[in-house]
Amino acid sequence: MEAHQQQQQQPESGSDDLSQRRRSYWRWRKQDFFPEFSFQSFSSYKSALSATCPRLADRLLSRSSDAYEIDAARRESENPMRRCLTWWDLLWLSFGSVVGSGVFVITGQEARTGAGPAVVLSYAISGVSALLSVLCYAEFGVEIPVAGGSFSYLRVELGDFLAFIAAGNILLEAIVGAAGLGRSWSSYLASLVKNDSDYFRIKVDSFAKGFDLLDPVAVAVLLVANGIAMSGTKRTSWLNLITSIVTVCVIVFIVVVGFTHSKSSNLVPFFPYGAKGVVQSAAVVYWSYTGFDMVANMAEETEKPSRDIPIGLVGSMSMITVVYCLMALALTMMVKYTEIDVNAAYSVAFAQIGMKWAKYLVGICALKGMTTSLLVGSLGQARYTTQIARSHMIPPWFALVHPKTGTPINATLLVTILSAIISFFTSLDVLSSVFSFATLFIFMLVAVALLVRRYYVKDVTPKARLVKFTGFLFVIIASSIGVSALWNAGVRGWIAYALIGVIWFIGTLGLALIPTSRVPKVWGVPLVPWLPSFSIAMNLFLIGSLGYVAFLRFIICTMVMLVYYLFVGLHATYDVAHQPPEQAKFEEER
Image 1 (cartoon, rainbow, N blue to C red):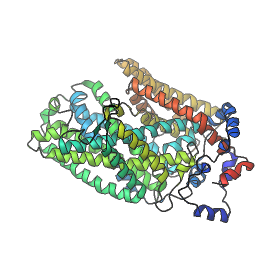
Image 2: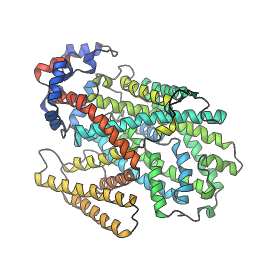
Image 3: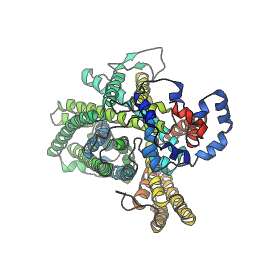
Image 4: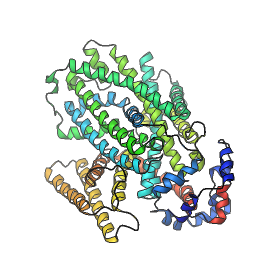
């Protein structure tokens, strides 16, 4: 990072520190939201806009540093987050975030119409893909243990611009996802109480379709979940642990009863829809594994990141993969795949063996899963927002950490208000059209960033080696896109896939033969570059399965964020990176 950032890391005078500690957390001055020189007056902003092109050229590939993200950026929060989480907390936070209601719905749907009994293999394939991403996140979490996770990783290795575009999209999807989760929670509760998913909603005929069912219950559950998250990280972790144990008990019950009433004949035929069905179902059930990235955002609050993050993340994802495979196998052995109810697979399966009361158990477990997903999601989303605010891409007011709770209340309020408004007006069918394109995109970018981190160090890596690395990385990405394109074009002959697979192998082998420029300090991903390269291929393959609408939404959202970046974020980050001494007074006034 530029020289001024190193200057920012210098300690201030004792009187300044005392003044900062006495400063009220709740403050609303313009200087607290836009302290940068470009926004001090209309003339300064006009001058900044006139220099947009050279500023963009400066920031396009500008990279942060480990030291800046770990030390200087944290000072924007004024108060530290509390290191109160162990590997045990992270393991259950990840379990609570990932294991929601999705597995109860998606498993039956894909077993019936997608893969048949082989849906267990779909879960295994997706689990391996998710585990590869978890390994990449774990190494970065150990090396750069800060709130914000992937945003900081990408900012350090791939630059400000790409980090902002990726982070902005995933934060938007997280907010919309929380709104959808709130609506689902309301629907589940209404179905249990009255067998009518809209029972708690208020119909307004004058509003447009899709926005005419107001949902106060969804708003209430979002406010409660985020309120708990604001009150303290450790308290939220304990609540998540207690409720997750309940989920484990229900899952054990489902698996045991399922295998007790199983028939091996129900697994025949095992591949009714062929290999194509297994792979397509793997792309669908992958969404049951998402959510661990929110836990990676908690690295700043772990007691010992070098130990807690790898054990917590890798351990939880391994456990979740086994749990999902057992649940899928239990369902398909208990009921013939052609007889599975796509809307309530487990509830109907239990009813068929005379346990109708079990539908309430499944419903309560699904409600619990959505609740913990909301709790952990609110923790992760707020810390993601905090780190973006620390970089000044959004107003640094959202980076402030409350001195009593040790949590980013301002950032939590932002995501709470936005998700509550969306959930109040917007129906589930509208929200469900927003696919998690950015989630896979950022998983792929983190794998790329890990390779960049291992093979390129500025002013250390020789230019000739950098050219080789760039070329081989391009081959890996291009061949991965090629496989995805062939599959989605309907090509099924093995020759084309074998040819592209060889190209991917050559690209990865080429990287393996290049000396690395950096080794992990404590813990690192094994088998580099093979595992990160395979993660890139898997994520690009799954991205290709999302369809036209997901690509269109990603492009539209990216264009909107680009407009914001060009008019606000670019100039704020440029000022932070190039702040001359005569402008430092504006920072000191904060």
